[in-house]
Length: 47
Image (tube, rainbow, N blue to C red; front, side, top):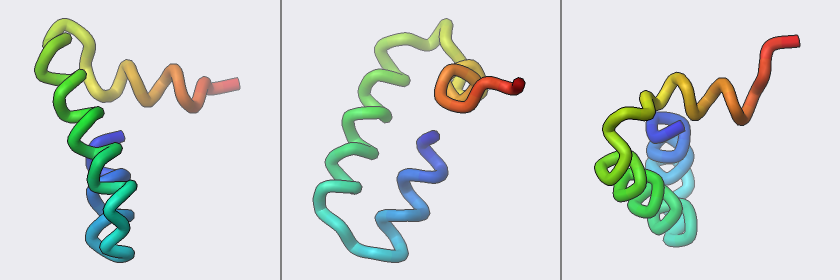
């Protein structure tokens, strides 16, 4: 999710997307036990 958010920001320059990226990054640092892949699985479950 971090990579996707960064890529959107880098292509659009959207301040809101950058702030979202920083928020996700902060949450990721606070919860090192949860991997980014696990978070992505919650967003896009495999059916």
